[in-house]
View: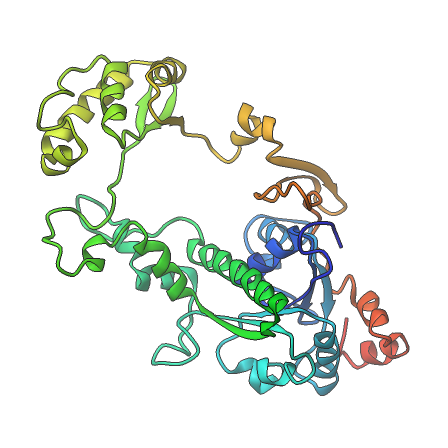
Length: 395
């Protein structure tokens, strides 16, 4: 357990893969005691996905650091009994089984609230707990397709849908889940009791997308003259790399043109945001001239010019380059440690920085069942460990 604003909160993480574990790890980063309940033998599928060194995957490390692991078979009565005992001590349960599975196992919300009325229970699904798609498999790309992300990213020339090259649906849903847990715990502190939170990946991603990419779909009486989303900017190629300029306001647009010594930014067709929206071809022509000049400059030359005119801009960095960036070094964005199986380990610290309840640095993900004996001993079941392990109930 670590310090942080959630110190003293216990979370049972019954989830696998990305969404649930990522939600739970944010709570662990903030000081909660997160007990990860995994199937004996195989454990979380996330242990074996992506870059893996000596049986530890980078995905699993990022989504399960600072947790404790108990390997527990929930398909047998003894395993369910242990989980129910754990629930008596818990504040939060997170699960992402298909709808109905936890109820059939006997560890759903209605069952566990009988032993812990104050429990905050989070059920994460793909499409929701009911409806024609409730039982449908919901991987990240499936949700990106249904929610509109793939169309939003479509190739501008061919219209072919494009998928974001990340598990963005999983991560967006996890952020919603972690925030919902905090809200429910706050409500409980104010005397509102425990509750069941149901969260569908589709719902979370639609909320994410519609913030800035569904204007015409939101305003049903709009005339459709403007695109639904806020637009897409192309990166600039420099002599030695890539960068991006975001000339959102009129001063930014004029400053970019002056930085690249391009005339025409005061043309009434492009001088204002509204005018550029109405005269997209003229605006693209000016942007094209700026890009042509940028291609003759080094990254440093371009950045110096743009920053001199206070234009929002940035260098395109890879994940491998970012840790050496001066801003990342200054803020301590990355923390290095040594993992007993992996060796040297570099992780981003928790993003939020709490002045009154600072969090510890990022920890290590547990081995499968690493804390089984410890957790059972805390429950007063030390005498049962040998029997339960021999029966395959725990590992």
